[in-house]
Image (cartoon, rainbow, N blue to C red):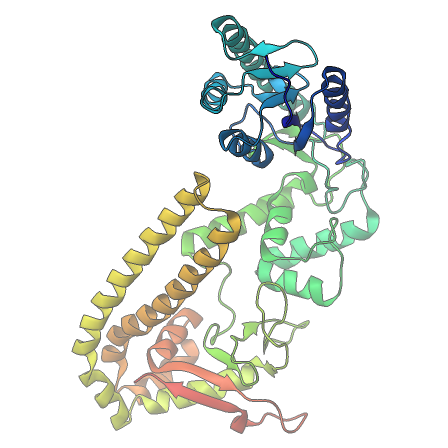
Length: 465
């Protein structure tokens, strides 16, 4: 048998919590020594660190090595043990087929050699792979049982990240962060959105435990967790009290879950407190203005946080803007312009059907993209831009559908501005907002030219046409 002159060394470890790659480093050292002892020339080393060979997840370096073997660039493979190469019998068969087609017969391990060119060698390799798969299955089951047992005993779970509100031991309450957690819980129970809380924490430069930016999902995950109430959960189910002290009470957590249930049932993230939510734009960057309270003052603000990407340059007090636009909306209902809008309703009906068809097509494309990413057919770098483009198109179509749906409301209220003006103070915010959306497409809030007083010239309405 010829002496390999372009061998490949492959090393892998399935778990590396320290991130120091010490396990693969030891494998590489032993494999290099084995190759040197045999006089084999090593052409390349392929390393997959912290990647399991049993889970079926992609191993980029293994795939690269296989491509090089397939292309005839490698004439031997050196691994520490066969279970480092694969723990799945089906993957072993693929490896053997590629090696056979490429004429690679020598697979050396520190523990034993395997000659894939004869039946005995392949038989031994299959035994190694089957045994490794069985051991991996046992290990996975042991880990699952251990995780369940730890949860039932109230012990903290794994993971390298420190939970916000607790020290690195995951047991001791961090007094400074605990104050922030209680504040977040109280604001959320009072009806403030996770988005607004995240934006406020970012503006105040409150650090997260990982150093990443506060996002609405970060706030929701924290507040919805059982941990901050001193409870231990496992797979989403509370299994008992935890070993650590809670930052909020279990009763407060029930209030938070009740808020979540209300938002889910109504389809709204929080009870409406702002009439013009989603209908105001920034006069500087064109971005959407968001509701954001400061103390007891309600405001509409262009937010520059990670969830919004605005310029942060426009702020306006909510009550005078809402009062001015409400009066303008009710006045417009009795103008001839509304009759002209209603004459285009039937054309809008056809347009509604067209938009719904486009939306169905885009949703199908989004599902197809997600399935391709899950199957490994496209990379994350390819998936994210395509997904974002579809989401932007869906948002635009939803806004258009919302406007078209409002035409039914408009047919009922057009010409009744005077009567509605009398009923307006007693209406719910939801009813007021429905009427406003039927008439107002959006309004741009321009920069302030004078401080201290409300300036109606800052408001530039764009009416539904």
